[in-house]
Length: 438
Image (cartoon, rainbow, N blue to C red; front, side):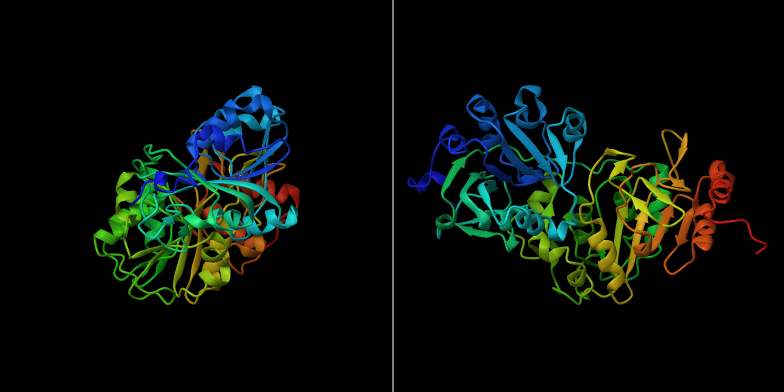
């Protein structure tokens, strides 16, 4: 591949690139592992000349000064589709605000709110090849849409990014400027699954049949699922996020995508986040294709995969079946992301299932995550009318099509034993499920 410097008319320094951002402009930023580290670092150093710059972000993976430091107040304001650790800390200081969204409409709705206007886009890409094409690599959720919409387009070239296929290619002529920053990629490990996560993973694995297409997240529960389905055959992947566990399934022959009814033979995702093992697997791998979030996470696209199984995690579920995965009461914790997209898409699929998994308790067993009502101010991620299957370490609760009374009983059976009587008593006291003789 060529260096970005092979295009002197496009190549500029970080200082020159950041200097192009002006006060009161909007700045769209590539997400998660695709974040332009050098551009964001340099922009923070130029804060004194800037006022009221609105940044659009999602799942920041580093504690950038531009968002984390108090002295940035008045200079930069962060509008965020999905909070990470830094955003949760900064939120009380009033320098970040959550953008409610379903992932497949995140960029479309944000551009609708600004009448299609975006001043600047900062993203990342691989070095250009001999024909001048670059790959947007591991991030297509909003990147392609924001790149197309922005008046000024600047990409940070990093040779450590894997070259991926799908809707990832951008020609050097499509961007205004490029900078170079060949730094290691951010890595996120699944870690070891706890005993409780293994129990939950076992229940979920029992619902994944041969020939299913799966969507998994990251963390202990998805990691546990991977271990339990190593004997399955002909699985496919259509997922929001591609993670390390999917590499293990592919290399073991469990995933071959041969029975997929949409994009047969291909792993389909919209972004990737994991360790170097994952990034090496993705590099020039024609078995994997990444497309923009508005396509991959469209529930009606997801539904074209027969036997689609979507697995997501939650913070709380109430006896109506309302799922909260994004906040702790009024405190924003993360975001809706693609949870409702994939949950709905799986249920629209022939033979599909939408699974929500959670531990039965939080705070070392002090509180129940199965509750009579969600905490005051909690965001509803999956409405009661969309809920399907809830799983804890105590079993499987089938809620789809059931009355509130039956949902309550099913959820009590998978709640922690210490809280089962409390859930029923509170439901009666509040009149959600009055006492009956049946």
